[in-house]
Length: 167
Image (cartoon, rainbow, N blue to C red; front, side, top):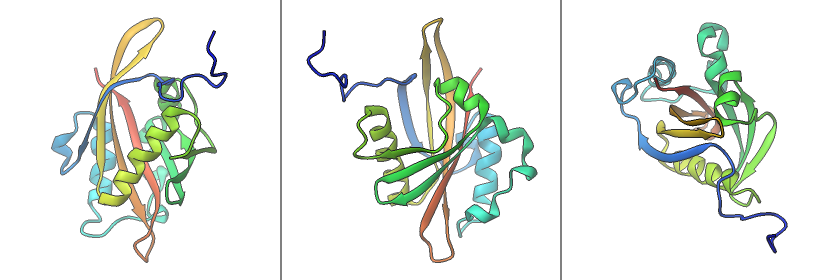
């Protein structure tokens, strides 16, 4: 029995394994059609950044199961607002209206907040690849892209992302 009733605060509880992160420069850096579609939309605003108001899921209905939206509340503090059904199935949790911060008790949430902080500081799209471990399956490979959204003053307000299984 653990002497720490909260569990190990430095151990992943989610399904993500062997994560590799990289800055995305073009859609050629991505392999899944949904991640390429979102990146191409985001990149079409270059050299500016799209805003939350620029995004309309009705223009990209095929992305709905793969999409997630995270709001920037303050430095190091985020609100996971939306999680598409496929995203929830892949990661093993349907995050909606969940606070995430660099001070979160859960290690997974702290790591996500730290990752979002790095995107916020670099102001560029980032991608991740890796696998998702499940009890009944050895692994499922995944790819994601995370794109910052800004307001008119250049402040980061949201991250919009897509996560998909790589077959």
